[in-house]
Image 1 (cartoon, one colour):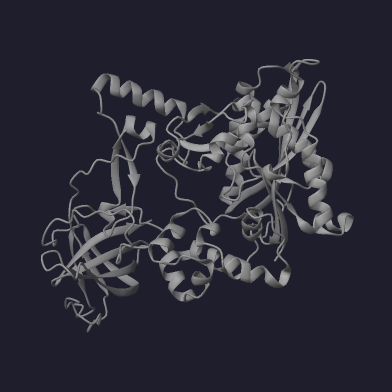
Image 2 (cartoon, rainbow, N blue to C red):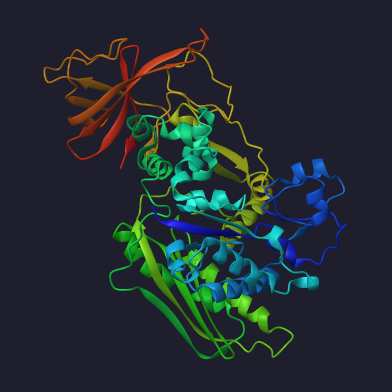
Length: 532
């Protein structure tokens, strides 16, 4: 497994403000604390806390918004300092970066020499208010695999090769990522990476699919993280050249999104995503080149965002001295691509805030229809597919509140009583694993599953079928079953006589190429969901 150096300047955003030793202040982003003064740190507030949690520790805590321009200036200065140590740094965001260990060790020989050079380069930077970055501000870790290196950086550790696996197994499972698979593992009581790798691989594959296998291989050390990347076959490059230096560049960059989208779409059609790229910018007074990484894959807007971040850093560098006189052009080169395992997007195409046009349209609709007339869907865990979608008011969604509408959802027709206990952290036994089906039938139409002889197929209490399913009769016609998986027995709420349920699911592949989930209960068959 490849060895990495991981660097984190976790409280770098606090450098944007000239706070004193006794100031009790915090920076908020999406209602989370992303920067803290020393007074707030001493009061027990930590990065990542919600606004309410932070106020419970320090009721007199003052909150400030992020200063994007100052962040860009500081991030640019940090990148220049790191590039003086090695040109191979890749940046995940404005506060973190990583470096392939083998890229620099021929020069530095020892890890201690590399770490000392990084700290020395950063300590020479002039921060706002005359402050300098000291050792407490810089976290550096070295280990095999990016997951272990990031965890090692929290304690400023260098993990030897022979101790890497033991170190990784002792970590909480949250170090493997922040997604639905990890959340489910926690709800199932799988608290450490060691607990996870002791699970049966077949069970992980059946429950979590491709993503579960990737995490399992990462945890065992058999998969590099980030995954092994390959360069595009022809070296994809997207460039823009201005006729004259441009001072107002935001709209110009955004106007190039269709050109970026075209190249991203070509890779997507080939089943690939770009995970690393290099942005080169030419200005009248200076040039800038920086490598960026995003392991979930870049799209055209995330690329445009990074071009703007880099431009903002260049602009702020000249402010107050020789002056900024614009940019002449820029070029984006795709460095690494990987196989696209697929990402389930939300209503707005990402987990970030919705685009401006969407906000304006929703606000306009609410003006016409009245307050709380516009709702936003969200996905949550549940036993039944029909219960996985909830709704929150548009205003609540924008403010980041967790309030949700508990509307009555249509049932399957065989519930003996309504189920209203919806703990979001429950393991939801019997639920269907990802990927979710493309279509879910709320009313569950009745179908008929028969054998070749026309007899109705039935499932006994032990999951056995006396006859092999061959034909499905839908309300719109008969279809031949080419193959099937199952049945899978589900026994829900066995502890409650009023709400206990027993049923079985069968996944069938039909002759027309479509796949469906069929459900049987008390001798009847229902169509629960369909896949594309």
